[in-house]
Amino acid sequence: RVSEFNSLVNTKLQDALKDLKQQGANAYVLDLRSNTGGAFQSAVEISGFFFEDRVATYVIDSNQAELPFRTPKGKASVEPDAPLVVWLDGMSASASEVLAGSLRDNCRAVTMGDKSFGKGLIQAVYGLKNGAGLVLTVARYVTPGGSEIQGIGITPDIAGNMPAPVIVPVLSSDTSKVDFEDISKRLDPSMCKVPAEHATKKVRHDNIS
Image 1 (cartoon, rainbow, N blue to C red):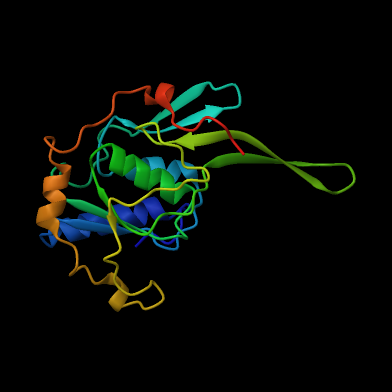
Image 2: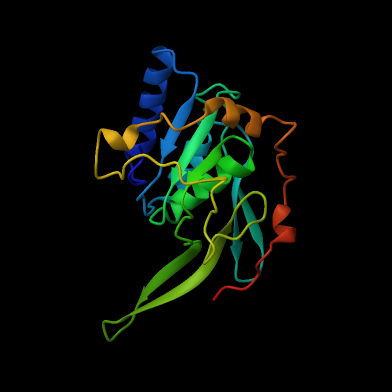
């Protein structure tokens, strides 16, 4: 489970994946429930644990200029054909949604659970002389397939089928309801196609509210 995206999460997750692999794991669940976000770059780097050198997300500024963020090369920790599920809920937001959208659109994971929060804006805070602060939206995230996150969220591929909430430590990690055979079929190239790059030219919702 990834509870937040901070300076430690990448190393800890990579170590956990290596440990699971040594134990013979051949399928994985990434629990992002109640993860409200954090460091955006961590989401991109974690995507790189599962696939290499592809667009993880696009950042689009107020002038509609797009900047692709790619996963690095040589950082993958998991076999490319190992089935992966990402658990989401209504508290999964921001960097969690970037990661979920990245893995889903690149046909690397199937999302499961409840619709995510829908926070896809990048905002800057400017201090004013009177002590107040001014918050400006400077850009937004878009998934590799061109789907907006802001105000919409990530709709899971499979609704529900969640274990106990994350506040119940043991039961919350129960993966017995995950049909990994079905997950593998959904991720097969015959069923899932990785979008061409620069997909943001076909963004479905252009306006920021």
